[in-house]
Image (cartoon, rainbow, N blue to C red; front, side, top):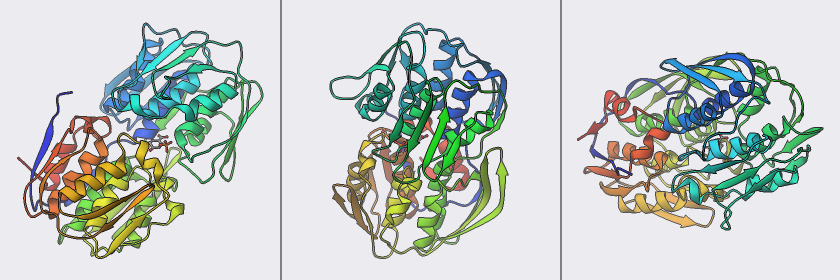
Length: 433
Ligand code: S3P
């Protein structure tokens, strides 16, 4: 790794107009389903980040022709559910847990063996959560003795549908099992303890695949067919959230975020910030393809600490690093519990954020499944993002309210979800050296 870093001068601005990059979760799924569809699909708004390009590369190496004629445009010449070929060598999913876990569901149903690998961070992430249900479906999949990648998948004669209660509310596991279910005999049902992002269900229906959704339970019958289609991908609220918080904690600022996804399974960050006193106006709500989108107008606001409601955790799971920055700028204490999943993201986001906040002079205390942060003054200094893209972008925003310069180490992986982050941040007023 080249070990790039951000060096930021204090007291920048965060105001103007933000065109958020395409949604990462939907971009992965769009390429996967389009590759397995019959006919040519057109995707608009695709996120051309290193994570999503790992998914593109994997399908290309399995014989799918994928053309990227212009920024955000992808043309996928689908090969049908049975049309993939054995790749030459292992499929390297880079930093992307989403790509590895969801793809594994598809690969377990192919007539060839595959090996899935990843970078140092992905190689530490838990895989038992997908291996268990896939084995229950009859798949030939194994992982390392530490229950982490690489994943080894060997062909089996057939998969059978299962009813699977998810032990953790994970959209990656749900999607993995559902996509294996496309190939399984009979019905596959996945039930989540609380709702979690539903892009796979929505997209399957866009590709004309019948899916039955009842509350937090999703069922489908194997043996159907995906029809090529046109897919519109909205801006990624998870990426916009950094700048939204940047504006909230700056003085006299306003940010307009255009055309961003507000799927209710993803928009917990808006509700949590509003409960903390944020002024965020939601304008022009409309549907864009299978997803709801809106324009957001964000105003500088005096925030106060809250106890984060348990029922908003899954809907906010990727936004906690930047919410912790908001909490550090809020009056009083913000408490989070029941969020142990944060420890198995691209980094242990409880540990990484608490360590960084403390280094920058904030009173932050770690708990096994959460933390407590009391608002204070960011002194400035050096923090390590340990290669976690969302941690790096979150600490960049701390510079807006810091007394002195902020250096964020290990920022290379920002490209996994937000290529062009620095340019975008500079345009909105952050001051990089
Ligand atoms: C994702 C689901 C979430 C999220 C990840 C993307 C997805 O992970 O943290 O960044 O696209 O399905 P879990 O399914 O592990 O909660």
